[in-house]
Image (cartoon, rainbow, N blue to C red; front, side, top):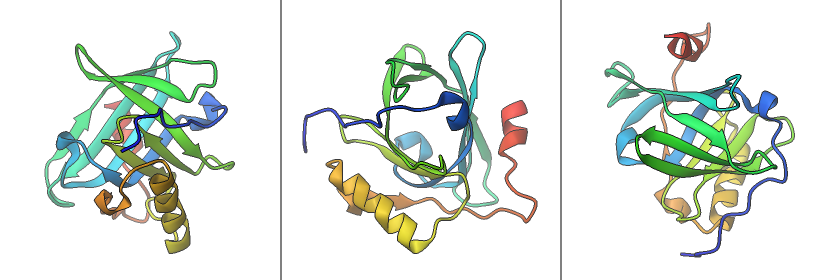
Length: 167
């Protein structure tokens, strides 16, 4: 595995990046294994930190809903390098390594190449979009075979992520 830092995008417009992101695939942490309908939602607070809500159902679409509320903060002028704290005092590196021009698909990585997340503004990507993002993950030094698809199934009216964010 490469030990060099994962390159990040040159600039992130934080206001555009905020909102709901569906987790399409990941090399998951132990907390998110067997996640269904995983959604990460960001809100920029007045103090400059990022209120984050990560919600998913454990084990099945009908499984118990899990909600985590880590706090993020920007660590450089590009807005692409964040710190994220799920559990005090543990802080994690959070790198926006890919972001398309439309702000509809992103890859969040770590220099340790232990975890990675492919996320999108919609619960599904076309096969071509997905394979292109998997290719990007491989170029970053990850083993794409370790990626796990996150099952997503939403009713026609859309994601309840906004509700989870307001809870």
